[in-house]
Length: 185
Image (cartoon, rainbow, N blue to C red; front, side, top):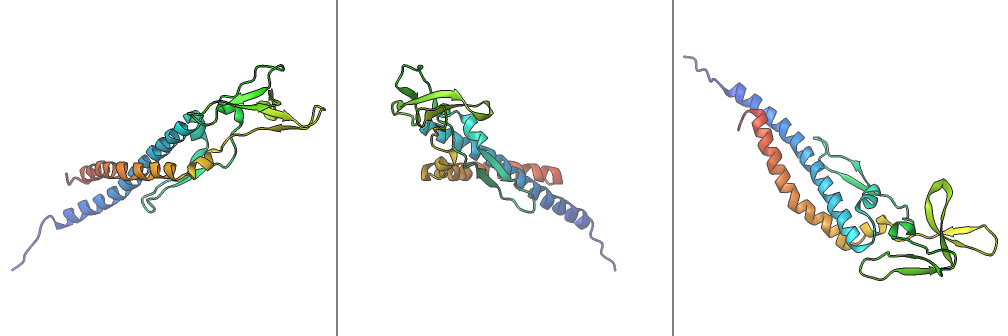
């Protein structure tokens, strides 16, 4: 007497397909959440300092994207300082006391005596201060860096909260899609 079981091989193939599709889906979900984290943290930074969201996002890059083999991300933030002019810097001319800028939201504009706005090396506008009476040397003024803002606990908490909120949603979406791809849904 011989027994033949039909369908186990097909079931095994479907589960193998589902495992591969789930791994790819997990990587896609983590990458999608990384975009949400960067956006949420950039918006949180702009609520504290007078910078545009695009300027904050320019200082952030995703150094490592998630893959099916390694579903993790690495976000890097540039340490380069931000010129004070990008904080709404203005100067009323030679007869004014100096340039002004609004660095922290909710506070007044800061005045920097003896400073002026000019075009520096590379064609970028900056707020400068002259050292001495001669034309050179001049010193550029900078505000808080995006990196220093990302070290703050409240900005880190925004990232952790976004991760905890968005990851289950994205994983659920990708799991349903993987089941559909494997033909099990």
